[in-house]
Length: 154
Ligand SMILES: [Zn+2]
Image (cartoon, rainbow, N blue to C red):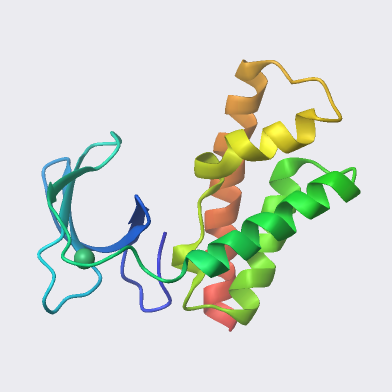
């Protein structure tokens, strides 16, 4: 995801990283606490990142915001007969509107989809996996486009 300053950032294991550099298909991430923390992660292609150097502090305090984002989302999943992706998108845009600098702290759809589907499946039978995967991919592109659009006008 892009921050409002145009820097790439990554949330991994509750730590927040800024992109340091890319070499071939490997992305090097460094802890957002640019001063004083040696925390680093390395990501090869689209594989999950791996910590290459540990942090010297606890994960960031944005966890409260993340918890609220998730609980708002889960509440709406129970209340509204709308697809998960639509709900996620609308909560994300709402959050982005009020907290543009914090949007990077939020979990991406693919990171929380399992727990969201669990909430939804309390009421509905699961959809075939292949259909989910296809529409999630489209939704992520849609969110990226929506955020890009918002970034130009806010
Ligand atoms: Zn750190």
